[in-house]
Length: 243
Image 1 (cartoon, one colour):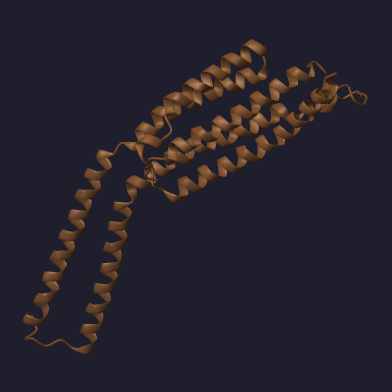
Image 2 (cartoon, rainbow, N blue to C red; image 1 turned 90 degrees about the vertical axis):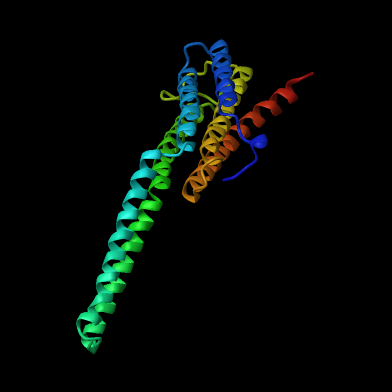
């Protein structure tokens, strides 16, 4: 995905934003599970900056090995062609139909084999980079679901004191304001997770990676939308409660 550097995401600034969010959560909800998750997200953001730089750099050993192997394959092919050309001369300039068909079939098979080998070597570096990026993106997809688990039982009705509890109901420990802040932190974490994912795609022109990043963006956006539905309920209640 080729983009102007002026409009590229800065991985170091994303990392700093996650670090600030981690401190904000700790100040509001010290020693909470959400704070631990955000600490983990901060670690992912820090690793993403280094991983993206590593993926961006050319893999020199792959390029050297691939170049040598392609040269060797082409040299063998050239030698084979020269040997085939000598056959009519040795046979007195005559080749029977059966021999011609065998030579043609062997040539086609050799061309296909050489083409497949060259294609494999040429795309090897890109596939290595793709595997590294997809591994990192899988980690982001997993933490998005962890964030969703933390907000799953945070229902606005419970914070507003509506309804009665059962024996298995979660404890009501947050005020409406605290719950609003908690949910907002979850939404911010999801949004930052999507931005971290985008870091891997902006310098890697690979459709598989771009599709994976878009999937994570859709996932985090959908989860955040559910959270904002809860925040809207709390904000509406606060507005109606004002004298």
